Image (cartoon, rainbow, N blue to C red; front, side, top):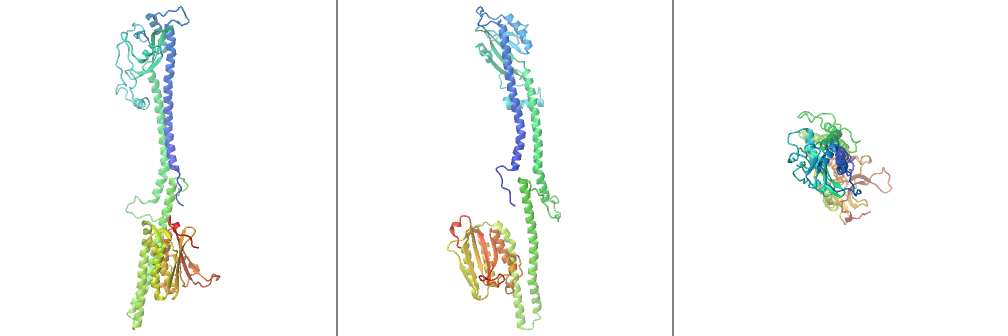
Length: 553
């Protein structure tokens, strides 16, 4: 079972995105909602101050209207104006100021009994002095000002206007021109002050400017409560985020830790013996995410490693057994040689020794090739290889070797190339082994036939046929096993038993397959004596090389 096909966003990625967005959404929603509430609060307060100011303005003008033709546009009486402002301003919890037509302060609800005498103007400060209220809440408020309101102190400052000076605030100038205006300012303590300026009209003539202002701490207390709520929302969002992070960490880290501990149970014991028990990887393949894929990969990897270990152990045992046989025969011949009395006996013993030495040499060579074959097949890069060229070269060598026994080699290959992706040296080894095998078991005067063609399914087929004794039907598959021992007696000493096993290993590494079959007369019974054996190799054609050859049926 391979890795699952990954979507644009895997299940694990979707979980991470979802959990992070949940905590962020709670925080952003709270900030946006409360900030909207803050703006709405200021707007509502300004509207209320405007309505209250209009009522006070009507009271200051004595209720005169344009429909009253007897009304005169007389200037406002300062004493009456101060009395009106003093009586109406205090219950409103607002500061009410009245400016005359020259924009000089006429009355102020803060000092109704002083005749309007006020302290001189003070220089506004952009923020409270450093270290005065150095608390967590104030720090949070400063951060809030930076993120939501902009840089603290960016609002214009609020100044006191003495009776001897002319007001220059923008909202007062606009009200003197007949328009209602409002402003948000900060005083010297950094507190917000909302102001609404209205023209005081008698008929259509502006007789003064009425300014309604909040006290310094009013808005700030409301805003502070709002910021406390935002801070509470942030704490809740942070707690939710931490909780979700813990859940996410457990979802990811816990199974990975289990897999790591299972894969390396003795990793903390450096230098000690490895646990002899078989490593069991936790089965988490039910999870439809990368953890499930990782568990599946580790399980398959562990199974493959144990299979390879078992194969190595079996191979080592087979090697020891196969080497032991010729060594036993060689030792027996060497020990018997000193007791030989005639030249004929010595020559026969020397022949046995030579045969055993050759067999050992072949065994060592094939064992060396088989031991490094896996690493080479993985390490080397495959290129496009023309099988027609390889087979033609190998058959010419085999034909030269078969001339001594009168064995002929017939090659039937297409005129165009049969291109596959592979390692040229290893593919040449496959056909060398098959041709050597056919040459060994072919009778004197026999013929070896090599045919190649391209199949309609996009595969290349090469068949090597001999006229030997054939293969027992029960052993058509087992002959590809290492050190296959049920071989015909006449060729036993010339083979290590690894050749066909190496051929299958190479062919399967190239994505192909190899099999053996017996050749019989047409219409012969299944148990009839074979006329020979055929070894067939099929390999997938190289990408882009299909057009080079056509199927030959």
